[in-house]
Length: 199
Image 1 (cartoon, rainbow, N blue to C red):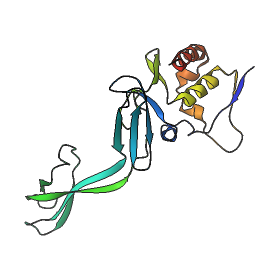
Image 2 (cartoon, helix red, strand yellow; image 1 turned 180 degrees about the horizontal axis):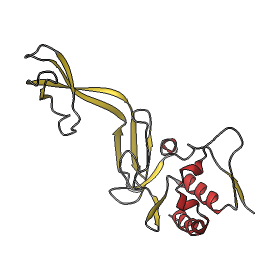
Image 3 (tube, rainbow, N blue to C red; image 1 turned 90 degrees about the horizontal axis):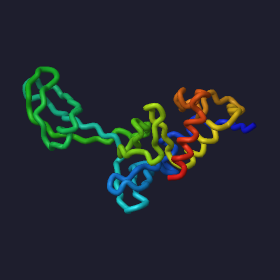
Image 4 (cartoon, rainbow, N blue to C red; image 1 turned 120 degrees about the vertical axis):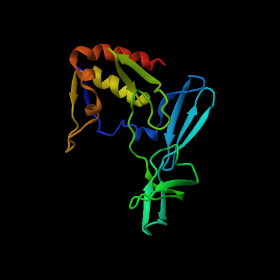
């Protein structure tokens, strides 16, 4: 009888995988690539063709702040439309009296983007398809990297799955969708994951 003690909740999250790398498909050659990050940027590097990309992880606020020439009040209008954020000057309406006047667009660093979730089988910074991606009954089944893939295979193929001792309420298995943990699906999903391991 095989048994596994589950891992802590954030062990295989997209954010924690940035140090070891999230394996993705290169947009140029469709070979294997890796997404990593530091505090400022996310980086993509193709392991086959050498193609590279960098993405700033800083979250910026764009606004026009001015003193209205009509009513004399100071105001700030946030620029939400990404198409308008890169103009040096925009005409905006005063939120108090409605008078429209030109104002300089200011770009201010607000924070760093730490929220990282896999959506639609793609990495959160470049939108690249995960390298270890397949589907089961129309639902995506994926792993962030080889370590995550090994965990999924070990967890789903174990006869006995235990929570770690201690005060942790959530474990890594809490990230898994119900269809993956259902007994009738586990064996077929493990076969799919083992095929991914051959990549």
